[in-house]
Amino acid sequence: MKMTLIPQASAAALLLVLTLCLQCAGVAALVEWLQGVTAKGAQGFGPVWSAVLVVKSTIAIIILHGLVILLWASFYRLQCFPSWELAFYFSSSSYATVGYGDVTLPSRWRLLGPLESMAGVLMCGVSVCLLFPTITRLMDSDPRHSRKLGHANDPVSLKGDPYASEQNYA
Image 1 (cartoon, one colour):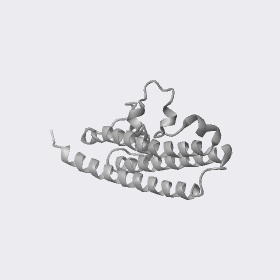
Image 2: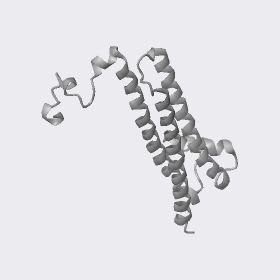
Image 3: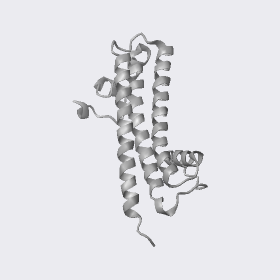
Image 4: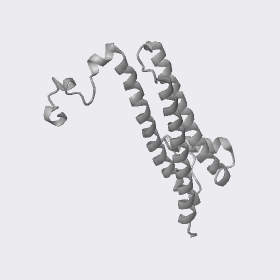
């Protein structure tokens, strides 16, 4: 049996670095855009504008993940599969950790599928980390929600929470 760990590890390292670069650049651009949109504060956005902002952000994130999937699919198309459809299908099911198993990589490249799944989970986590503060900021700017939510570091919001200790936040 031929040794394939070094080519697999090399390809995986390159694909993972490119994935990180693409994701970080995309997130940085999205953060820059969001900061520009909300520079004057999110007050007065209203529910429709807030929803539009969240939808636009989510679409941008989905496009970003699509580009990462396309990156991996390009490698699979060149090295593993005879068609783009098969390569994109395998890549998207691996990235989303669905992994049906109806299409598999050749044994020479079989370590890449699980590594793409790991990258997909991590990149989705990065995306959630971007959406969460965006939605929180929009909710904090709306007086109907900010009174109910409080702030994470605000001891006043801990009143009535039997699991919170005032001394942890002093």
